[in-house]
Image (cartoon, rainbow, N blue to C red; front, side, top):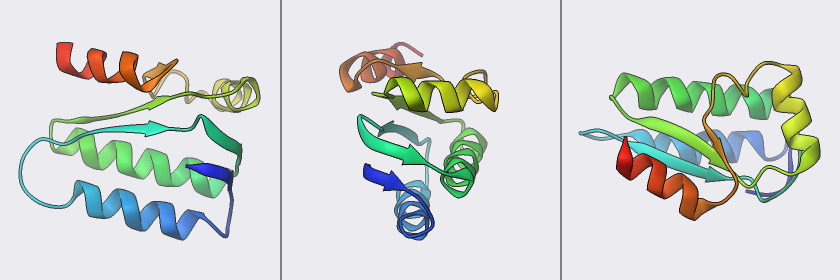
Length: 99
């Protein structure tokens, strides 16, 4: 995800995540927020919804690349306890392989 994750981008994010989670089998997703500068409550809702869908399929949705501001937002709303958050895509991928 790039730039601002706000009311203009949230429908696109939701559509992309839903498409990735459709179909058969276990689904693991890594969402790289390394180029995301802002996220609003709608963006957070999209991520939580996709996380729930992945968990229902015995998969997971993990995040990586959060800047300091996004880390603060996730911590403030308690989502740092919900999502597994990694520094980069490689680390996130390795963690999924080991789970």
